[in-house]
Image: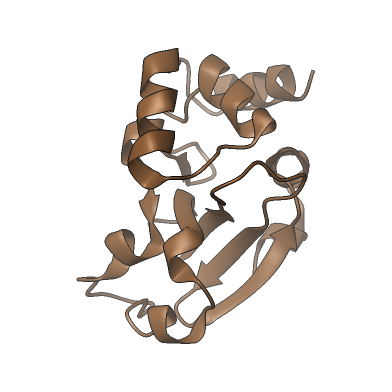
Length: 155
């Protein structure tokens, strides 16, 4: 139901092409990064897998699995506004944070904390330069807030 709502929202915002991941891609990502993706995120990747490198009408871009990177990989050579370079020095365990979406061309970026073992919660954070906050304990809860255009997912 949640993913159907998301797909409908994206269709209304001009995103109509989806490229679901194959199981081998999921296994490879988890093995390469030594993490376990949460079940709700796996289901999302199996059905939608992001906005196919396009932005929605409201300027969100959700990355496909092959574009999801650690926050370090995403911003180690970042030049621009807001300044994300120093973020790596103030957030705990940045190697566990994987950027999966952005808003307004990186004004905000969204990351999920992934662990080596399966967990019931995988925190979702929003970042704007050096400012950040945890906005959800699960990927599904984040998607609910996004679908409802909640201000809770912004700084």
